[in-house]
Image 1 (cartoon, rainbow, N blue to C red):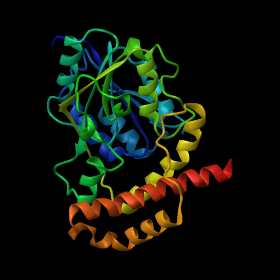
Image 2: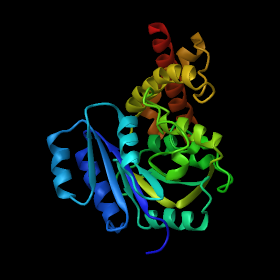
Image 3: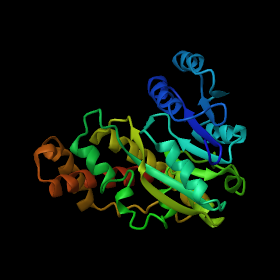
Length: 295
């Protein structure tokens, strides 16, 4: 095996089943006598401890509910590869993903070159129209917006499937900012870009997302994202997307969208997209408003 040594960093909390699938897929692509997998466990539980016993060649680090950023930071500190590959605990790497990242860094040896791969829904599970909208026009992956794979906006820095030289990570504090709970990857991407990072994209380095999303779960996540964006604006201005004005008309549109949601799966895509967009935008603004009221 040629190319740089890779340390795969995975944060986890309470997702033993998906973590097991994640590690099983990675074990088929790594030589752990040379490469490394480091899992930062943010709060132990019996099912995760069982997975740890099943994967003894993985390095396990245990934290006491300090958050995903702390789990990643501890794992990065323990990594010994020239390249750190971030994977989430609900991602199954498709065949060839690790080698795509290794080949990229073999061909791009400058410290500033980094690679983000495609994250998409697990094809073995049902994929709803809402989920298709989320990654193609909705507030999720947005890989469809990448027009130049050799010059990617750091907003696409996605720690579900991205690799960076460890030396570049050492140039920024943290590297993850443990004060924030959302936008953690794009915030780090912005600081790495400030250190000269050149982000590339490989749509053939595929990670399959095991999560299933619904309009209700999207509403909840967007409210959480909205709340987190207020603190992010204070710490790192200009990264979080702005909220649309909370007008009566927008409130009305969101209410109509919720009424129409049960019909969205049979509506034309252009109308269904507007239904889900109105809900998500209003939920984001709700989150920002609730966070602002508490400050």
